Image (cartoon, rainbow, N blue to C red; front, side, top):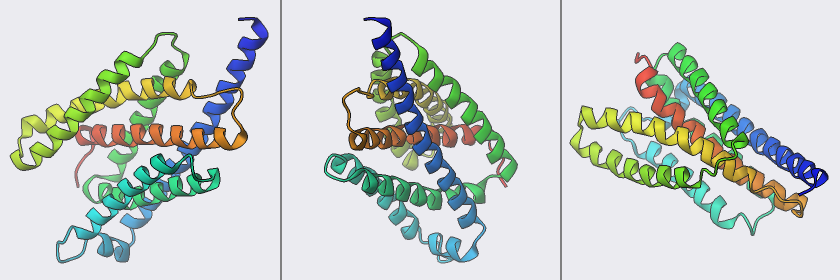
Length: 231
């Protein structure tokens, strides 16, 4: 491969990754702002967590989040890039509403410090995934299989209420999403293509942003379990 072609490829990849991080950053800002707003607005909190103690509104929000992700993933090729962007940002709003619970459980200072640690960890692992020449596919596959086990273990522990299992899941969750951050960044980098139209490239960048957004949020939540100071 000659130098000009290699340089062109690097420029295409860099431009594509910039779009991915742009979408991801916008979604994270929206989520954070919505979460803080909801947590400081009694009427919104009352709607999400009624005084009756019913968790139905909260679970409906969770269901809407899953629905948005499934809809976006399944229909991305049949919708316009603008529609995909709206659905992604709508998902970040819904996630902000559910994450308002974090501000009710943990102190603001510990949330802020955990966010900084998450950002630093995510940044380092994402940079590694982008720059490394090593194929991270096997690591990504192992992390994905471990994630399935993590989900199953979390569901089981809802009934067992084992503190030991809780901490095993917590530390495993951090390691899994650290690995997925590097793997997903490398995978997204490879999604860039010379012959993509602007529309296709934008759709790909939105899906890539969704992937990294989920990695970041989950890493933050697992780190918060042992870094966060409860009120």
